[in-house]
Image (cartoon, rainbow, N blue to C red):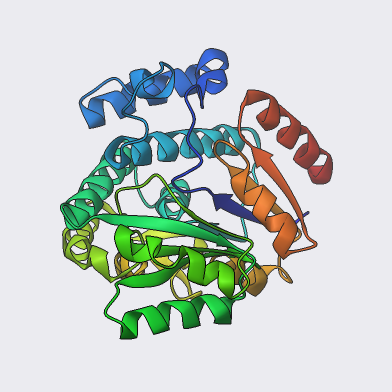
Length: 313
């Protein structure tokens, strides 16, 4: 039996139409959509399946991504009696991972994801917050770039360590913009501002930490079926109290995604990404030699079930 780590994508993986093949093909997914609609108080299918301007707004983006990730995992779980070795996610994906491992009901999970988005948006309201991706910089160069800027009074931080040479910075948009030429001068092949109005995984989100922790304390189950690898600390945890701290910390600390994969790759035979887009599968190719597959739609799901069923025999 392969030792499997389940991985869940974060914001940025969304696209209109995601999850539709699951809902079209599986009654379970239709029922889950109805449960999500009741929890959210609006029709999620209008966000997921119809061209709209809300899917790009974080309070809608987050529950939409989480819903598709959870449905992909639950449909997979319904077919195979495989217990993951670990679960982890990129940013919002850590909440998806906890939910998939039994930490939250689907209804509570999408509702909390929506609230998480609201808390993040409110924390950055009026601040002119944003994020910028850099390509080609080492971790040390990106950190030094931010440290030098901070000494000049600029509010910028390294926020996502996605893979070698791909680091996302967060902070005040004008401060980030002022670093574009400087980043290129020290070796960045590209420095591009992202279309975002929040600054994730940096101290600007401190006002969101306690409201999120309070909400989690009311809804989280006591224990999860597999350990979660923390984005923020790389520690492995499996209980409610640890999850509350981990999800609070990850709002204001950088996502150590490549480090998370590297920390467990020697224990893992196969990484399976659940959710739209196969973004993490692509990153994993740059991080580890271990195999990664994605479950982004119904065809992917059937392919993954076939692959793993052979291993079970």
